[in-house]
Image (cartoon, rainbow, N blue to C red):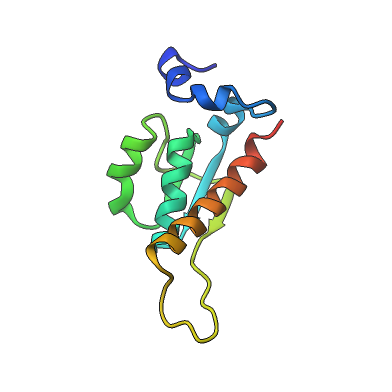
Length: 118
């Protein structure tokens, strides 16, 4: 059951037909990676209100705690997301900042839908 503060924080989620915020609160994720795409995925998962979020880079904890004040940042995870921008032929290094952000957001969204759909 959501607290009044959580109901306010996730009010837009509660309007979505077929989405179960309580299931997302019970879910736990491990975002594997230290790049920008992994950070974006972790940001979206924390802000969505997942129950537990484990990341490979502990320096992200402060930001993730602000985005998801009720999200635990340690402990076992049920679902693992390996998030890194795919290297493409003829493309050196990582993607642009926008590409990395979109890649991470897509990974988080797919995980959220998988867990939160009724």
